[in-house]
Image (cartoon, rainbow, N blue to C red):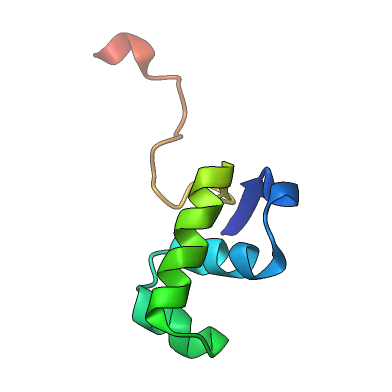
Amino acid sequence: MQIEIRGMERLSFRERQVVALKETGQSNDKVAKKLGLSAATVATLYNRAKNKGYQVVLVISGDPLGVFGDDDEEGDA
């Protein structure tokens, strides 16, 4: 899986780091520990980034969710 942050040119380097980690489900405490920041700073950076506006796009290779099978069975419903 890959993550794409659209609008990241509006974000600082630290905001990009925080967004990438937060948008993959990591807690403020875990992000803080990984980046050597306080959890409050992580929350501030994340909120600041959200206010600047960005979009996260997940790029998933193949069909790991099993939802894009053959459409040959459309008439069988």
